[in-house]
Image 1 (cartoon, rainbow, N blue to C red):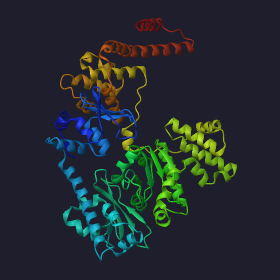
Image 2: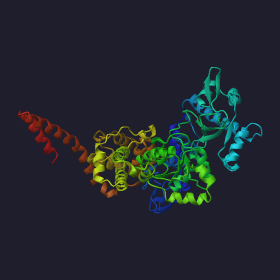
Image 3: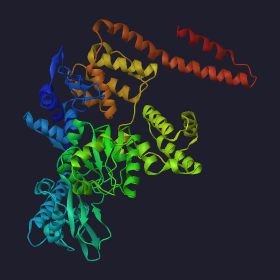
Image 4: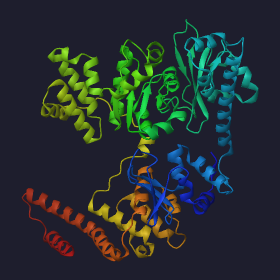
Length: 580
């Protein structure tokens, strides 16, 4: 895939005005050297979002995120790195130089194009007076407004084996058609994957169509909903229906209303709930929870109220809790799904708002819906073990403690007993961690040595002349070692810390860490003493390790009734003197 040349990225970071860029999204006010405003990523009343002009960086103290202007656009607009660079380059009239694989770039362009053409084709079918009568009738029966149909680009696939294939086959190679996921292979060649279905397009966060979900219009079809398969563009375990339209609102309101299907989602949108989002025919997974957590830490599940919907809500709530998302479950009753509820109930909007306020925590919801308190002691014991197995997968100790307390209160079992059971339970499954999550692994620099390395990096960022003679070999953390090496190498070439952040690289959490160090510095008069103390810690670290090894060796000899060699004792004594 074509890549933007590093020279272009450096020009963008050199020539942009980061305050100008971020001011389009955040009301900034100058306070001292920096600018401050309310976080655009979380709801807050006191400004914790800081922009440093001289460092060309931003940092959000509330969420722990930070970076340069490119990072800000990626996080706020939910766009790719390349799209963010292009956007800034266009705004500041910077010529973009690209390097890389033109053929790969062309593949993605063609896949986006074929999905756009397919969507237009499905839309035109729906507009036709003769081609899509059943589809039109379905939408009329469900009372969906013309604006919803238009805004979400609904359409119809014809009851034909090759109608779409004939529409696009002359414009694309067969390889592209296969990779699009819009066609299936048969003995006669490629045929349309979607036939006689109401079509719902999925948009990525840039607004491009990446896949479809088709609702059958035939009573004889056993498959009610059919989604695009996994393709270069479409990953069903991560994508939400309606995300492009509603994730900005979800971020602002800091909570999402999660539903199962497209029609449920569209009904909520039509009734004035703009923070709805849907999984659309795919089981909610930890991968979905990871994606949603980037936008909000609160979710209300408004699933179908039949047995299948209740079970799905329970599974989804566990996945959300395990990723640190505060979760509540809204139960509609009467076997309603949200679409039915809004069509059947009078004053449905007011009732739904009230249900949101009174939505239950997952623990009491499960106990109520499953009738746990009416079960036998043996059955309750099985439930407790099943529940604790899910709670054990919660990584946040505060959330885990709260769940134990709630479970204890609901079923009248002492917390101590539940904690004992929790310790004895072996989790039967592992949390699903997406590639995206793996790249953003938790990094905690807690040892004395690591903290000293962080302090030296902070000095290096703010006062690079002070660290030119530092022995980088003393840095034991691979990332901190590389970061300090880049800082030393960068000294004297430019003072643009945004470029430095680009040079250092690392995963998202590591980049946020460097951004936080760049935003907050030390007083100049304290530098010499901090530098001296930190270097002493790093220089003593290998000595301490040698002392520990020698002590272990001497202890093992003594345990086997052997006398330690005089040389070992002397070496240990000398090393201990070096620490004084």
